[in-house]
Length: 114
Length: 112
Image 1 (cartoon, rainbow over the protein chains, first blue to last red):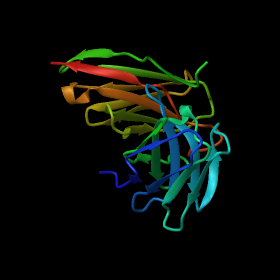
Image 2 (cartoon, rainbow over the protein chains, first blue to last red):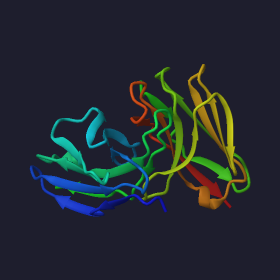
Image 3 (tube, chains in turn yellow, purple):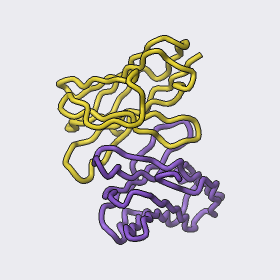
Image 4 (spheres, each protein chain N blue to C red):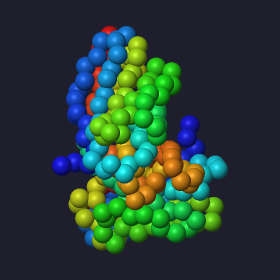
């Protein structure tokens, strides 16, 4: 049991809509990273939040945005949904400590865009 | 060229045998290396991490790192049917400890 939780488990949206995904980090962790995993692929880094600020971003457009709250929980927001946004969205929790940063994943949110 | 490459498999391994998984990466500045196990329909689970050249053992798992050859591997000894899963290799981006780039994974099937 990693202690990282995500909600909702599944979500179905239509193209053009907006979605918010939520993540609660593991106790003692202060950093949250978000990944997108398409079927048959490895997770792709979206961005990371540390001390409520974005701390690194992958190759995703600005319509992917996020927040981190004082309790280290986080949200991922996606605007103007496209069909290719259908994927498993994973949140990973870690303790920022320079080298290392072992990341522990939550169960994920399966997003389907129709 | 993909930045983190793994053989997609499936890698078929008899029960009790050793499974050997390989991963190569392109960024010489990468310093942190991770192996995750992902069962079908589930999220990745961290099973090993290694930061220094050489071997690191944890139970039935051994990770091996060779930075000069930009190569990291995972050995699973005494393979069990419960080891059947996809194994993901992850490497940090050189500009950030916290950004991980993943390979596409190697599917392992342990046959009784």
